Length: 391
Image 1 (tube, rainbow, N blue to C red):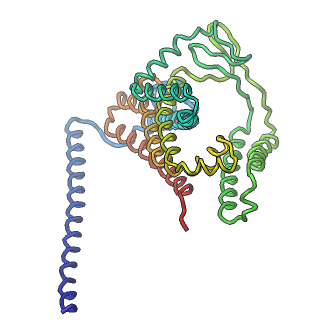
Image 2 (cartoon, one colour):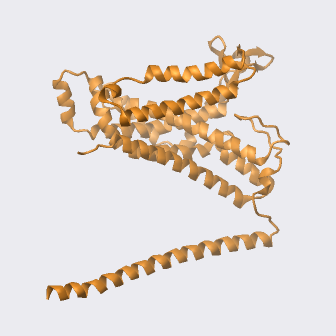
């Protein structure tokens, strides 16, 4: 009877699997058909209105000037593709600076909220509640207007000699190099890659004695030797370029524009409030017995936090922190509100010039999707490296 009942169940399970596969196949075909219908309808409507499609316009010259660029850009000579590259670099610059600043500030504020000092904990709590409940766009506009109210270059605030703050931005000294700068930057990047590989090999295959040693002195030496050797061999002469006031503005050095400053300050303050809550929740998620055990060993509160609590809290902190980093990357698109030429601002101008709205929106979506997936992949890798491994 048992063998007969088992033989009777097998066809039923097989039929269920076939129905499941058929439903999945029908769902995939429905999605493909819907996508095809939407694309075909869009292309037909564009043809009916005489609007050309495609990305050939990317290789045409653009006459729009770009105020802030990490690359050389000449309107009328360089193409839309180069302008888009500049926009992506500006977006990455803002995202990277804000992520670093918000992580440092948010970690300190989150730890301070758990401080036994009543006043410090309450002040940090008020900061978090106030910042989180004010729209981020409003904060960006506020900081931008505050920076525009600073003194003019003639009455600029002198922090130290050569470092000036005015309504034109922050002016600071830089270095002038005749040649070899690109090679030195490449040597630095190569040194970073070699350092990461050495740390990985040490952690994966090294002995316990080797793992206990710090790589910091050797890493700093490695990152300094490569660029220095390249500059020496190429005969590059480096001299300081200190800004000077001439007429109504500064000449020389480099500057941090008010638009970028307002964007970085506003987004960093806004994101730090959320990071603070994530860090606070992660610390509270560590069992109280860990604090008591460290106290019984005579460890100070700071050493307990650094050596015992925070490493365990990371497995709680990293997953929501990943979502916050993705939010920072997407919030960088609000740069258009303060006039900073990020990817969204440049694409909006491109759409106005060429009328390629569909292509422009597709470029924005693809760029932010790629950046978000890269950030997510990096954070997931780090999350796996700090995850609690049971044996």
